[in-house]
Length: 373
Figure 1: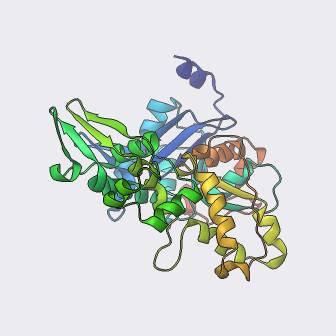
Figure 2 (figure 1 turned 135 degrees about the horizontal axis):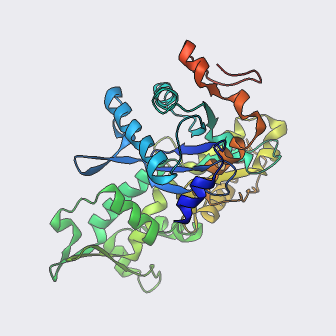
């Protein structure tokens, strides 16, 4: 009931802040220190949960699902009157223009918001740091989570077993394909990022092979096994090697020699010489994947290692890196920046005003100091 009373007592002028992510959406009121709710970006379709952005080719269907989703945000989660209230929408830098125009039309026409402001997620995150002149930001996008999901499924098929109806058998023998929600839950509850030195031992000795793992078990102890119940009559026995190596996909270099660590180093190499040191001292890591145990320590070890190899040691004189600790959980830092922005007196000048939008239908790519629209 406290959530209801808080919503009813909130000022009608308090802006609503929404960060619609590919996997999860954060919503709440401007000036708050955390979002009111973090919910999956999905709607019920034929009594099944369907992620909204899985199919963006059908704009009619996408509009229908977005409209239903925004209605749920207003009337189920934040419990606020949608009319004549300002909205701050935190958007990813890779959001397609058609999605931007569609959201503008839904908020200003269908829900009659008084204004709508788009805040780029990378800028919103830096709002939480105060006065930081320059920063390198890494956002663990949903694609990182999907890559881990795929690796978990692959490792389970190679190493896991299942007890079903009291009978134990190999995971691969029952041809079990887990859905994204279960894979995400396994990732969050069971998996962790292995330290750099330990990952090197795995790679050098090819301990991923079950035969070699048993042979070297006395020398190299793997993490403990975990029993994960799927349904009442089925339990997945997850070996330690699956828990530990699922996240290695983030640090393995592809055929082009790229990984998340090389992407950060490439950003420094491509920047001007006189600001590289300042950028390396102001690295901000955000996103839900970055909250996995051991992720930040492993990323720092990868950066230090790569900075000393032949690919980068002649291009980059920097050998140490420093990271910001934002004033909030890494999975909602961008929403928190939007909350700061929504509480500013300058919000209106950076927003699309409903009356102006109804006249000309213009959605600017960016805002200047002049009134938008």
